[in-house]
Length: 100
Image (cartoon, rainbow, N blue to C red; front, side):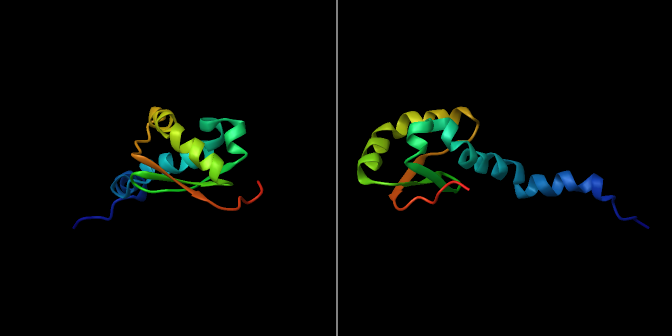
């Protein structure tokens, strides 16, 4: 008769199969956005989401969107240096929510 495995023996395998650690690392980029881009840019932007290949960033006006588009390569390089491999940053214009 085979006995059930203890949870502490299987939890690592389950989390590994769900790739939770990778997802948490990805979402840390959203939290670290102000550190990645600096205080000045962070005042005009918010990282709002992430998927397998893209970071989504809300920008408060078209001028900043254009500037960030030109800076995208450098920003992606900084993000990729954190261990999160992204291919693109998608900028959209919108009203930013105040920091909580």
